[in-house]
Image 1 (cartoon, rainbow, N blue to C red):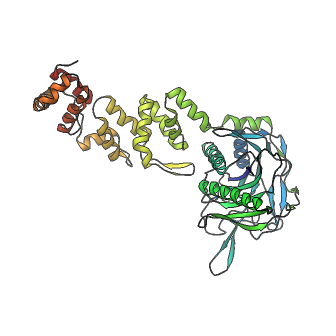
Image 2 (spheres, rainbow, N blue to C red; image 1 turned 90 degrees about the vertical axis):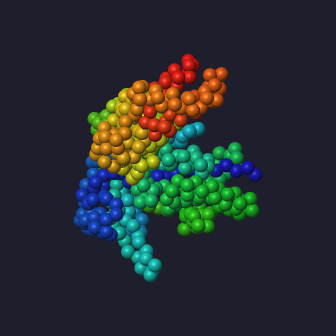
Image 3 (cartoon, rainbow, N blue to C red; image 1 turned 90 degrees about the horizontal axis):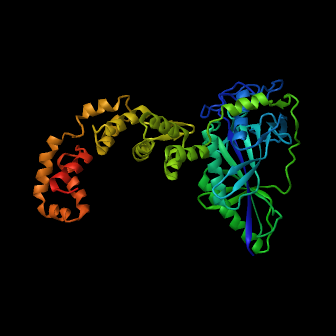
Length: 471
């Protein structure tokens, strides 16, 4: 039998606020266990939540970027369950009245629908040591999240990985999430089922959890599809359960059964009033919306005349895109700037979340290329200047002075070198005069070798044609 996979993703993305969703504790990652806690995020009796306005703005920004409609009135609910890392015994979330609905995410060959984006708080973190003891770190408890619930529109592990990459890219460019899978600030659960090809009914769903890379998500889903096919084709039944991914063994494993949907006993949180998002608030969020990466790529092709591939490379991170645009504005030749950043700068850029360590400024890049434009250094020398310039506050002029390099553009100084090289290669000169034009590169190379790369290539070509008597 031919089978079709049905995959829906639920993505949790931590919002880049300084403080938590309902208290003033810091939401930063990496602090010692339980360093950022208070009565509210510890769930102590009598502590009351106060909603973080910046978290709301970021959540609305994300929903708008995904094409969702914004509900004027929504409610926070209590999602009740009992884990050691959930101090209150419930999680503040949104259930049947979320603040946004019905968005979409454009993939290469399809549009994946989004059911809703809603706000909630994170739980703490259980830490288990090798001695069998466990502790709970509540630093993460109460950190603001959005959950992006996708429709079951994906059909392969490859599509799921593409979906996650596209979603992460949007959240990164609008600066509401740092996209860090390793630290858990961007994580997903994958719901996977299969059905006979052509059928419209859904099969029993298996939830895959705790997978922390795009590659592992793709591999886990592909393995799970194969596992379910083998079970059904051997006459078995798919059990509704939660499974994890074992990368060493290359297979999923059962974590816990979910024979029926868990009853979270949702009810409106009595400590929080309805969330009202009026037109003025939503309008102010729209007004501050950064340009989306897909729109930015299209603009680079249309406005700067970049190839689509170059536009894609330069929009892999918002800081790289900003560097390119500023350098292009200063230099005026966007294509040359794009080529220089791709060939020289990108290999030295280190990104971490929405920040990036870039070794040169846009002003320094523009300064290097201006020296090339003015004929003062060659393209090869520009690479040497960049290597010396990166990581320093100096400008290109100062580096050229320090290195003692300048492009040789004096015709009177180059003419004897050209004449000597032509005279030393009579056979090649005759062949070039006879029409073997490819030999021009040989002569140019000899001159550049003689001048240690400092000769102006355009002037060298002109002088060679004159010395050889060719047009």
